[in-house]
Image (cartoon, rainbow over the protein chains, first blue to last red):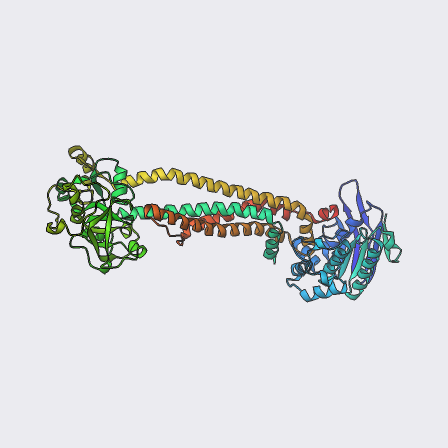
Length: 209
Length: 417
């Protein structure tokens, strides 16, 4: 469960973003759309706790992450927030499986190898586990990102333009995986996108203007 | 896990890693070798001049006299008359006088005529057999005995002078009566006998000046049967040098002036000459040390450049680690550990390489100067300091990249990626 109240943020004095409140139950999906420059990514980064808004609250599972210290935010994010980016980022020196293990170790102190393998299997990429991320196709990389985001069974799954660099087939597959897995893992899924292939499919959306 | 990540990261870029490690290894190896050589060299030199206040010998280079008579590494300056040396040896200021007469060699190892005091001075006990009493009885140093596998009661012929290829004196055979314990000093590489043995061996030549130096063959027992063994009381004989232990402090100084003024001999203080020698060495050692630290500086710069360059590519990696719950401090740690791992690896390789170099050096110095170094000695204090210096270089090299990683702005990095 995630909800926000009166979020405001400004990079400079001339421009202030006033973001609409949002609310998303566990297992539900919410789309944030809007044209470029309207602050979609900024809103997502605030939800993920990458930086703090000048005003307002972000409540995830009864914790207001705006009030946490930076260190506590890092820990909270690791445990309860999964993020999927437009372009997949990996630790290039580690294999796919080690990348996943690293993610769970940073958040929980344990490697959760079993869970990682199970997720890779669910996503149909278990045979890529011992490859380096750079050896995978973009579609496969994006699936590994999803596995990593879900690995610690987060309360919130944030996706920033997850399909924009994918072809139709892969985009559809990724969206399907995101929605079905967020239901299975009981996470609130928030997708930031301007991809019309997705926007048609969801009713629940906020448009930034 | 952080260390594992750091370890994987450094081997993900093997070329720059290997460059840094090679640079570190070579600088550490040079410094380690220098440290060990300098220490063991000084130790060897210092331990050999214990209880020798002055060396009495023929006039010439004082350093040469010390090197030849105390360390057995150079040719002697010449001979001195035993009778005139005796005047000083029996002087009341002298606590102990050990005469030395250089004779022949056996397969490159010097045969030295002296008294039992010589063994006492080096605290060399006999491992086997007894001391030399009669002429041509010898006590063999431990290292020679081991290398040439000599035993008590073995006999051998010496070659003239200090070259193994010298003319063989085959009219008298030396007989081994004792083998000394190892001392770590020059005595390990010497064959000791009485002074009259040396005289008697060469006496023959003086009487037969017509003999060619090479290729003369004696038929065993032909001429020498009637000859009587010589003793120390033989008049007008020559020796090479005398090691003196002086009772009187003033005499130590005044004799160095008085003896060359009044006789054909000189008296030299080994401690003074050795300090002078180290002074000369010191310049070379210091220059090498600067060179080694220079290489270390370069390796530090190479680590810095490697970390700094990859930091740009790895910005998104670091942001990702933060997204997955890593704190700023953990990022700083990754960069630091990477650099320190390189330094530790470089130090370990360097320490090993330095010791390999030293054992090679030891082999060649063993052949040329009968001086060996022990590569397995660890000088905890100096090598510990070197380790700390190495680690410090790694720390400094990683400082700026680590701080950059610490200050990374996740949002900006991810938005621009």
